[in-house]
Image (tube, rainbow over all chains, first blue to last red; front, top):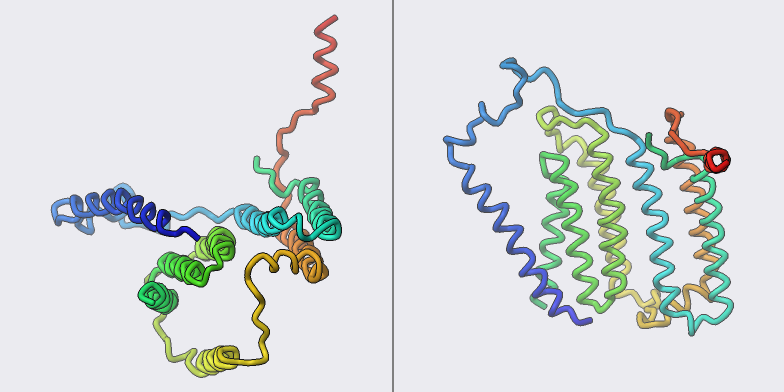
Length: 118
Length: 174
């Protein structure tokens, strides 16, 4: 695989990210601008009562699980699409069977409204 | 050789940092770094498809799931008790078992080496088609299981009744 252009691209694309983070860090890290009092959370002068986190919605996790399932399906589709001439009719129909079974799960998920957000 | 040693050493160091980092989000980030370096090792072996699949599936999905777990469990950094030696006996035994498994695989004559060029895809969809069938059944089951376990009755989603809209539109035309 031709990885030399990718390596060059990676090195060049790493530079703006590092410059942005590094310059921001360097400019702010002097003790005038980043002492603990200034960095702590503000609650009208009181010490912070509790963490500021919200309750985690479980629908994010469901979306991630569904993503991983269909992502793996797409992975198989990639390999299948590349080798269609070698696997013939049997390979074609085997993949269609896989897609049908996953479509059953997809239909269940759609009808249940698993991805509905209000 | 240099690239191999760089990637493998960073992978090993990152995997140790996964368990030693104080902040759990840092742990997940080191976890992602392990997968990046493993993907680079796969590129060095010439398995570019698997390297990209590692990036997409492992980092893009599995590491994100780990990140969601870290976000879900409200882990405050200051309250983690640093009692490492408590888990040493059982953890040590499991670690030694894993290490022995690695030594069984390396330099073993009983494991067939599959040719890694195009015949993998050919084998996948013809000879090993039933194994992929098992995977699809498992994935559908996982989907249904995840939805059954995590769906709570959401509030009424506002939907459009298309047929009612069409009928009302026809009434405006008269």
